[in-house]
Image (cartoon, rainbow, N blue to C red):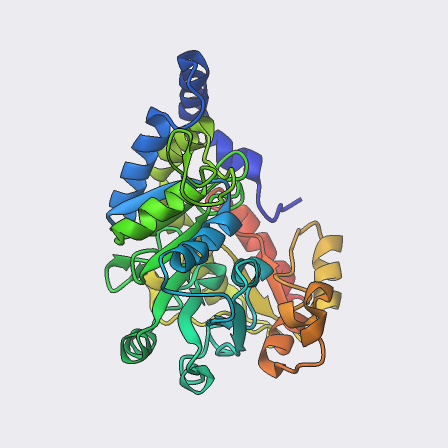
Length: 365
């Protein structure tokens, strides 16, 4: 069996250090808002290249708190519009609607699967306050055109960096390219905790302080509550584990990129559409997405051959029941991607034999 992601093997590759870190936290007797959080936040901010990193409960909350902070800061208000790719994971959109903001869906580029920057300007109105780019599958979504539009129309640029830890754009990390970024450290991510965890990175001092307060019941100091917040804090064990794994992130990403390069150079089946790289360093391959018109048949075939795959994602956001008011809308490129996308096994612990077997099996399809 070639697993889609052998999470046990990934964790065990740093197992001794992870166990030592967990044991250190247990022995300390301090389990929330302690030294482990402070250390990881400092190390992660330095790694990303921002002044601040704020640990929160999960990746969705990270995005929710960014938009809520902008509302509390008077920069946005309910009803304002946020441009977002139509083909993203639903969490990106949930963070917008959770705050009473209005998502404006824009189609992706069919080659890169990232938001099509040539379509963004026509979606901007007098109510637009931000563009939320999503570094989907691990590939950088930022373009100079997007930066120009944000400056021209005075828009906030928010990054959903849940799938792209360590990704580079001309030497800068995703998560530092916009005004703020949300990060998920869900166990299966390139930088994954042992449970749910997330973070916000930014150079904005006020935004960082507001996010930190909102995620701690709205408290600016003990028993003093400026906002009606929630409990969304990164615990000490997750922070300690993440700080261990952060030290190996670039090496792990390099192994992912090597596996992806093997796929790209050896998959020759004309039925398969391979991902397009704009820059080899601008993709960290959280996911290796292919497209196939016979996607469901291919997935069953690979399963029969002992190869696990996942569809990212079978139903686009505008066709989900929770957004039934959008169900009548048509986004043909998004719908094509969701109809044909299949994610191949991808991790930093895949063996050469596993890669060869996946390629051979696909080429025989």
